[in-house]
Structure formats: C-alpha cells, structure tokens
Length: 127
Image 1 (cartoon, rainbow, N blue to C red):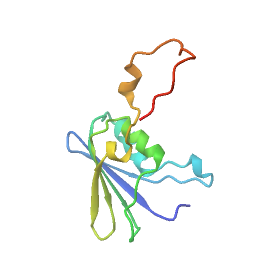
Image 2 (image 1 turned 135 degrees about the horizontal axis):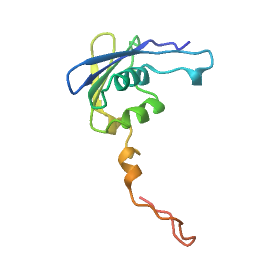
Image 3 (image 1 turned 180 degrees about the vertical axis):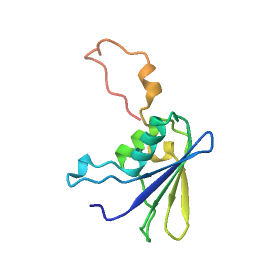
C-alpha cells in the first residue's frame, strides 16, 4: 500500500465535481491512481472537457504531484487546464497540465502528417 492518501476532484466545464481515490493493488503496477479513477468516472458519465483538478494528500512537508502515467492521462484531455497541488494545511500550488508535462504528446499529434519511411541519411534534430 502506498504511504500517502490521495484524493482528486475534477471540475468539468459545467461546474460539476468528480471525486476519485486510489485503487491500490499488491502488485503496484496494477493499481489505479486517484487521478485516473476520477477522470475515468467523469468520462464514463459523458464529461470530456475539464477546467481543473485538485490533488490532495496527507503529506505535510511537500505538495503531492501526479505520477508520469497520470500526467499523460490528464494530457489526453488538454494541456491548458489547471492543476492544484495541495497540502493538508490548505496551502496549494497552481500549475497547468502543460507545466507538469512539457513537450507532451497529445491527441492532436495523431493528426500530424507522416512519412512512410525515414531516409537513412537524415541527422537527428537537436535543440
């Protein structure tokens, strides 16, 4: 079982809240984080546009942050919605999905033009 308790609440464009919780498993990779639970529940009820997510835990010294899988799952529903990372004392840090997962890959990338083969003499891009 994880050391921290997390709860998420998502606010859809209609102002409705969707709570979520961790669903843990002895084999950790089969568990479902609270972020994905809440988003999945909202999607199953017909919601796909989100304005914000609030992430809470029982950690006193630091803000809880979504795992990489949850960040990507959140990104599937847009990069500009708000993320509130909070502590039990009520303090919070506000970010966007884009700030949590910069240079991300999202659904719009699936629509980009592709080539059927990559020439062997092409040098990799550098920043």
